Length: 122
Length: 224
Image 1 (cartoon, rainbow over the protein chains, first blue to last red):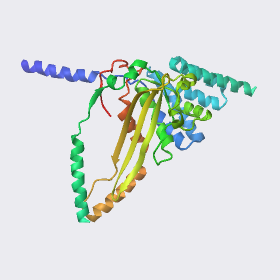
Image 2: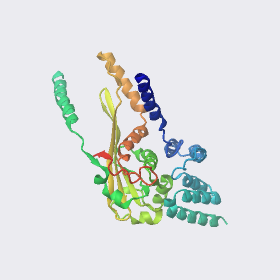
Image 3: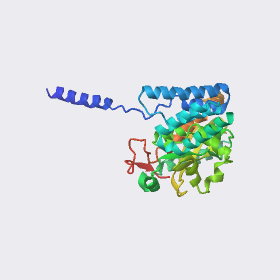
Image 4: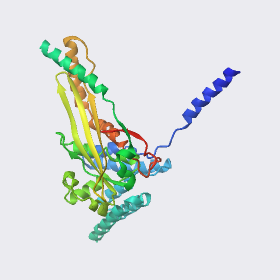
């Protein structure tokens, strides 16, 4: 009888020890690998992979109900800004700002910059 | 030669023993970095690394490893790819130039509460006949954009022994020389840079996105 009690007790400790798996804060996917590849050899291919890595992070984070990591929306916006997709760029900068209020000053500067660039095209 | 080797061994062995005796001093995060708890910065601007190593490409490669660990420590990290380009457009090619300047303009344009400076002190491989070791050493510092004061600073160093196991005799020496050459060629510095980051990032009082925010004052760290 005492032995079973002990067994139950020990088991409980083990089981409860396993149950505390905390959710990670962010899912950065292949952020730093693709960033590194782009720094090592900047070209259409590595820039394309960097863009895809950023888009994947957003999809995965949404599926896992995680906050999109700092800078991911902004980086995507910047890629669109460079490709002259002003509207898309601005919408990503706005998403960064909504997710992280700390980014407001910088994002509004980038949005101003995007609007200027958009006007140049007309 | 034999005598030389003997001398080397006599010198090295006590050094190993002595260095093992130095006990690290443990301090709390709050006593070491009180400014972080007073100012409570939320957003960090990661400056382009200051490269003091002999490897010219270390700056670009190292810069890709910094954002993630700092974000996991609970801070809003401004997107480095964009901020570094903006800084270049503003003529800031070298972070060393702005290090001693008032930092308030980094709040005005980027909205950064504080700035993270990193200095690459070592990023190289040293060869000693049949053995070689790789060293990555980083000094890191957080400075306030309000007061330009240092709020936190720490060093992370990783030394990796790249020589494979030592076999006996001449054949063993040759074999390990080859292993050393192969290991060195394929050594990916960023892997070790991440480990070096791991040695200092954890000592930063955590930021607002971390569950332990403002609850880690009594956490112990090794004093440097």
